[in-house]
Image (tube, rainbow, N blue to C red; front, side):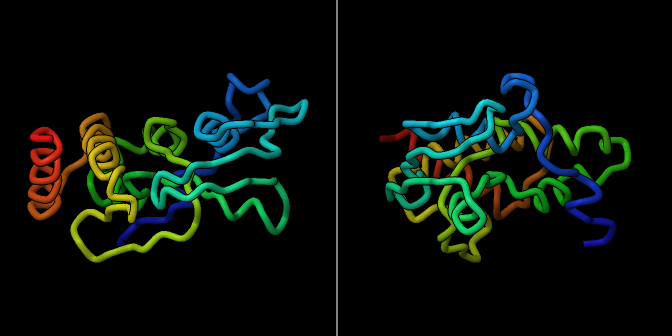
Length: 165
């Protein structure tokens, strides 16, 4: 995608003022999305239990060189999608780091995602489809991001089915 560079355009995790000023957005989201959380004195995540909303599997997280990567912080509307959907505009450059670090955009999840080729990827856990799609629609609206016609059709159809339940 012309001009797109995740690292240079969106930055990295920012320090969270709600976590001693040392913990980052990643620590904040892990703390929010996990139970039995253990943090160190610098408000950095050390361990916790995750009920992965994407797979419905339970997992135990322990911070470490070989284990931290087992739980990811997913941008529900991917950073590249946000770029392509409007954050590419130079007038919106100031929103990119905020987007990257907005807890509303983020979800802790395991790393075993089965990414499909449909307009909008849906997690394997069908029980979470409605919440996931509603969260995507909210993010697209909040950040004034566009949707392709296929994405909009899939979103409207799924949310209509959810409302009918």
